[in-house]
Each structure stands twice: as structure tokens, then as C-alpha cells.
Image (cartoon, rainbow, N blue to C red; front, top):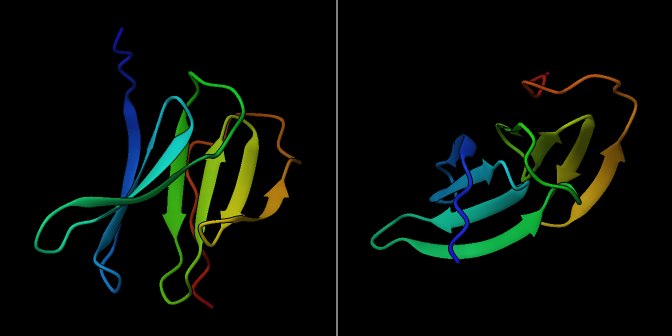
Length: 98
């Protein structure tokens, strides 16, 4: 059986030739898009599924933020830190460029 999940956010990382997509099953997929598209990696941002997830890409550093349900994680393709202080759903994220 094929299970379809909704893509909830996509961000481009032009300096790497990548795009990062997150879906409602809380899986983050990283693809290289130059010449031909190929998957770089995938990782689970949250242990449960069927929630809204969003992403932010740092403008100069190799970091991605994922926000799924009430949990924010900082990634460099591995989880560096988890922030769990939120009591409501996270709908958007952004890095402060300063």
C-alpha cells in the first residue's frame, strides 16, 4: 500500500544545489537538484506523524530548523539541539540574520 503525505514546506539551499522538503509525516528530505535530481538524505524531525511541519534555512551557515507540532530542532543533517518549550503548534520559523 502506498501512503501519500502532504509536503508542508520546501526551502532551497542554492549554495549547495539542494532543496529541503518536509512533509506531514515529519520526515525531512534533502535533494541535490543540479544536473539530475538525487536524494542526499532523509531524517525524521518528530516521532509522530500527521502534523504541520515547517522549515527555515540559515542564510550563511549549514543549519536547518524544523518545526513540527510543538518541537523545534536545529540540524546540520544531524540533530544538534531540540527546543521543546512551545505549548502551541509551530507554523513558521526564521533565522535572525544578525
